[in-house]
Structures are given as structure tokens and as C-alpha cells.
Image (cartoon, rainbow, N blue to C red; front, side, top):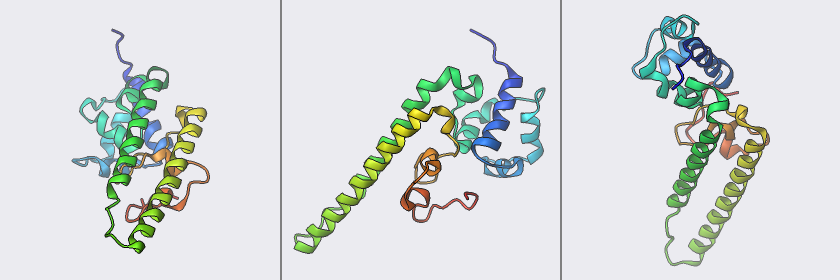
Length: 177
């Protein structure tokens, strides 16, 4: 087994924080649980600094990358990331379907259900199109972490994303443009 390159891991932590998540060192430090001082993040990102082995999963979730990417870089994990993101999309779709409650036995309820299903169909089609575009564009399109409702961040960054993807009700990230 090849030895891990600590300096490269430190550089990938900095890249994930700055370029993919658009966070400052103090912002990342505050988002960690438990939070750390921003100078600790600075130390992690230094080429000769300490690698936070126990925090790599958490850093990955916050910055929208995988632990494997932080450890090995894109070439080693491209296939795994695609599968992971597809599973996240499937979970989001399952949650959307689960939110649809069976209506009372009235004509208006049937109309409302049809409207909800139509809206859901549009969202599913948009997500499938965005996924295909993302796969085509490659793994470098991962720029944001998954939001609080589990919507993968690359959807937020996708050109032409509808409002319900860019700003889901109650989950708008104040750091986003």
C-alpha cells in the first residue's frame, strides 16, 4: 500500500475549503463539530502541518468532497464519487415522494395531488438532467457541500437551476451568492 502524501492532503484541504466550498479558515473552523480555532485550520493546510485524520470525514461533508478525495485526489476516486452522489440524489427523491400525503377523497384533493405529482416530475427531470450535465462536465464541478436538507451542492451550482433547488424553503445558506 502506498504511503499518503501529507503535504498533498494539506493542499487538498485548502483547495476544498477555498475553491469548492468558498469558505474562509475561520468559517470552516466554526462549522466543525466541535469547533476549532481558525489557526488550527491554518496548521492543517500548511504543507508541513498536522493532518487532521479524525476530522477528514467532517471536512469533506462541509466542503462537498469525499474523504477519499482529500486523501488521494480526483484520479483515485472519480468512480466512487459518482456513485455516492447518485445515492444522495436517490435519497432526496425518495424523501420528496414520501412527503406526498394521500389526499381526502374529494375532487379538489385529487387535483392537488396531480399538481404535486406534476411538480415532482419536473423536479425529477431537472435533477436527472443536472446529474447528466454534471457527469459530462466531470468531477471538478463539485463546488458546494450538501445542504441541510440533503440536496447535493452541485445542483446549486448548476447553470439554470430553478429557485426550488437554489433556495429550498428554510435552508438558504447565507454564504451563497
